[in-house]
Amino acid sequence: MSDVRHIEVSEDDNGQRLDRWLKKHVPEIPYVLAQKLMRKGAVRVDDKKAKPDTRLVAGQDIRIPPVAEGTGHKQEARKDKPKDKPELSKQDVDYIKSLVIFEDADVIALNKPPGLATQGGTNMKRHVDGLLDGLADKKGVRPRLVHRLDKDTSGVLLLARSANAAREMGDIFKGRNIKKIYFAITAGVPDPREGAVTAPLAKAGGVGKEKMCIDEKEGKKAVTEYKVLERALGKAAFVAFWPRTGRTHQIRAHAALVLECPILGDGKYGGQEAMIEGLETKKRVHLHAARIICPHPLKKGILDIAAPMPPELKKSWKSLGFESSHKEDPFADIPT
Image (tube, rainbow, N blue to C red; front, side):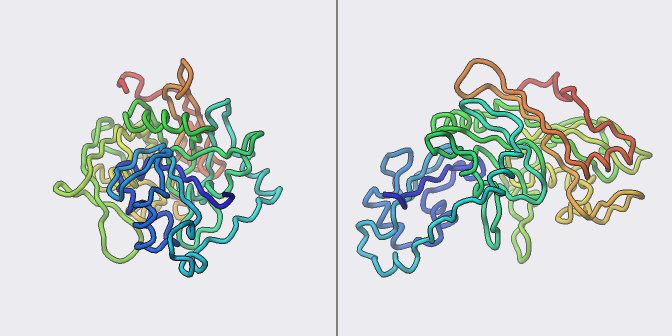
């Protein structure tokens, strides 16, 4: 049926239970109704029946049936059935196409700008996932998200052209057979100048915006390689980061809480308090997903995709005398 939906499991949701994933991503389906749909096999994972406690894997395809389909909850379904998704305007299609920096038969790479969320959320009307119809192939098949970037982080964002490519890319991310290189300006200079931060992360909890904290007991393993590439009068540094794991806000939290050098402009972790003459540090987080190096999901060879910095970051790098077009792999001596 036309209102059957398919949603890709993102890397952030890797390992999450199916019932909790439904509550998070399909909140319009009441809990009791969701349980009934799973028991009937109407909700399917990679076209197979799945139990509520099934652990999901990044790249899997979740089939969401029409809410009223054979559930006996027609009144609830009519009330909660999502509205038809409006077609994208030509302006939106042109916009999402303008972000493409690499494309082949299996993979698309975008240079995501800051301020554009990867997926929707509360009061989030415009996001990458909502624009992907603009990149549909000739058969009308839209690409699938493979991973996420924070709303305030710019840079390389990978998409898969098919479920098969998405599954393979999910395995690549899950197996950590991938090098994700981020460039940042930090307030202060990390000491030592290079190394690896190993500190488990967990949600800080409490009222307010989502924030992570170091939690040795309940936190999930998080490892970040880093290397200082340039310094500016001891007040700031151009630092390359490579998150070996994929936790929420991992680089931002490790920089601020372990290295004690928050990323400039990062209001969640103390980076907005850093005042550096000539820089607009409060306007955006100075963090850019500069490059991804990984095996091609379906072909022989390596994908090596770099995303140019947006103009406002280039301006900051230039103001501090840093070289923004750094092309060498800072972690070339460290195996994936």
